[in-house]
Amino acid sequence: MSGNLNDNELITGLKQGNEASSQEFVRIYGPCLRSFIRKNFGLAYADIDEIVQATFYKVVRNIQRYQASRGAQFSTWVFGIAVNIVKDWLRKAAKQPVFLPYGENITQQIAQSANDGTLSEAGLLVREALSSLDPIDKEIIERHIHGVPLVEIAKTLTMEEGTVRQRKFRALQKLKRIIEDLSRGHGITLGRVRR
Amino acid sequence: MVRKDNSFITGDNEDLEEFEAHLKVLAESGEIPYPVSEREIEDLNRECAGLTLPPEVEEKYLNSLKKAYEDLAIEKVRKKLYGDVKVFGRHIQYIRKEANLSPARIAERLGKDKKFVENLESGQLNPLQVATGTIADIMEIFNMNLKELVLAVKKFFQLPPMAETASLHARADRKIGEKEMLEDISMAMDDLLSVSSNKKQKEVSVPEEFLADIKAELQQRGRIDLI
Image (cartoon, rainbow over all chains, first blue to last red; front, side):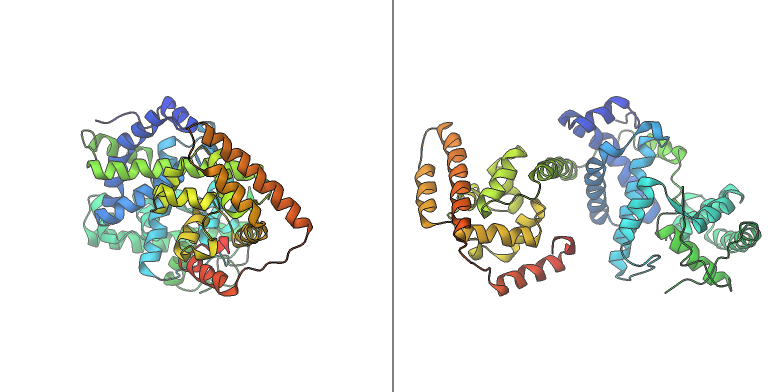
């Protein structure tokens, strides 16, 4: 059985801590979140279930902060939380302290930018540049930089892996040029990454 | 709103790999969102139509929600505490009651039986005798940091022995309802005794090794925020 993902009654019920709404929420979103993570990140179900549990937990902990009026659909908000948790999980699984953009706590950074919507100049610049790419190229780059393996991207977009690899390469070159042009206008230069 | 942070956008831009690494940093910090579109979610919802979760998975998910609501309730109570710390067991009991949680539920989350929680709350258990893992569990559930724990444990040892007898007496088997009321009375009594004994400035300290073990345990759990 499927249901309306953005049902207002469901959201209100969750905000009130209504038990029936909890059940409804799990029934509608549970299978969806599972297939979504499976499709995009290709993890084992045991791991997926851990991630989905963490997602449900985080949604409830932050439910009062969700406001439909801010523009984001409830479903987009929930799936966004899931993606952040997957990324955290992947980072821990890989045991590599990947990139530390501003120093300390990445999760805090993510939470902060998700909550108050602040962006750095570089972030705005890249977003602007991405939006001028071909939509498919944009999606390939976005998935790729979020750590989705090329083979998974190929599956999602129903393309050959080789095609995705080529498009990714060209799109990166193009994106770099666009950013260089834009940044001259903005007076910003993209620089070396601190490792 | 634009946050001024140029700390990592200085210097010049060399090769594509470097550029890619840079994009990953931005993605990592949440500045470039993952492309989940409404269309994709709607498609998923259609695909998942008819799918049901295995019962044991559904139970896990529901339990996760339940836990989140409980933690929200605890958080709410904590905000009203304004840093007030009671005698170790009473402190836990107070937060638990105000958050509307049963001793049985706390026991379940601790993987202990109800009796354990009752003994802990009434002060019949010496906190220094409780396993490190369990203390850490308690700290996680009640979002209690090390400083708060130390204060609560100190208060436990500052309590004159009389309080123990009074509490024990209050906790003797009674009719239901009566017991609830007596719990409140003995909680108030412990509070009172704790205040009067504070005036006498009885100096107690919590053993270093007890704290070191807890610190190590919390560190291992990644809960440095509680240290």
